[in-house]
Image (cartoon, rainbow, N blue to C red; front, side, top):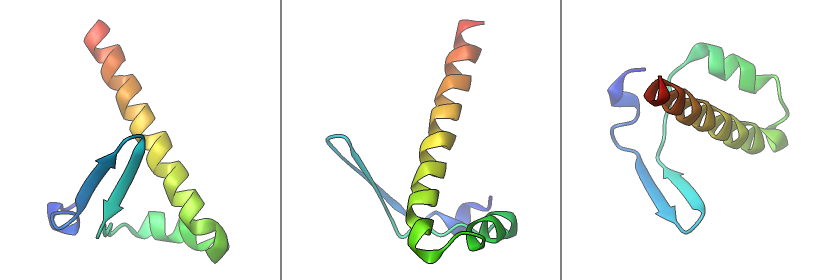
Length: 67
């Protein structure tokens, strides 16, 4: 992913809430995947994707650090 697509983004952490402002991701495969869901489900789908991705990254990091 090109840094230009997220360099203007702002990540806010408030308690247990994560807010991502002005995030733009240019990825045709992701857009195609998200387009298959209804508009009303897209925010949940993206939020779930962020959660799964970050948890996977965290778990890989823990595994790498243990080895």
